[in-house]
Image 1 (cartoon, one colour):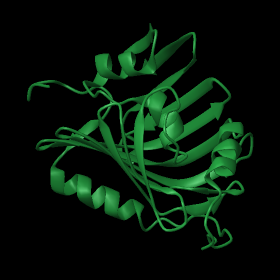
Image 2 (tube, rainbow, N blue to C red; image 1 turned 180 degrees about the vertical axis):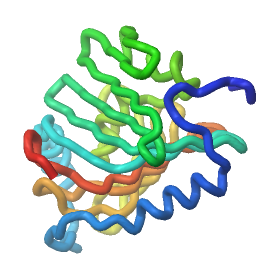
Image 3 (cartoon, rainbow, N blue to C red; image 1 turned 180 degrees about the horizontal axis):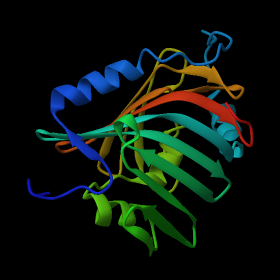
Length: 211
């Protein structure tokens, strides 16, 4: 991506500001949950349980760094089976973009209007310049590999994925906590070449329940 590319989705901020923004997110407190068990996880049962968990709502933040450029946004993602509704809003509420859709297509809405495409990745790239695999993130955000492409997972001491290589991306999963009855990651780093995406989940919320 050229240095002159103008992002309509994320407000570019200096790299130092991005780091402060993400560090501040780490201070946000999630609702109290039972401590994560130190007993090993049955991976097959864990995958089955999270695969069946196809309706959920997360709130948090997403940061993007590519070279000396950085962007950040508040993240609100509602998933209902194959349908998704993702709201991204910049620091201090400046600028809001909504990406919604299902397997049949996607729509992006922002201050410039409404736009449609076959995939959310296509819309995101056309209107921001960022190439982020949102369809894979549907699985990665739960600490699972995307099931339709080869992957190389590495596991921590209790049998949860600590890192993953898939589809040209390297992922690191951190801060597993109990949420919605399962062990779910609350910090995910997604890296490809010089592009780094950090997802910080503040809350996992039951579907149709307000935080």
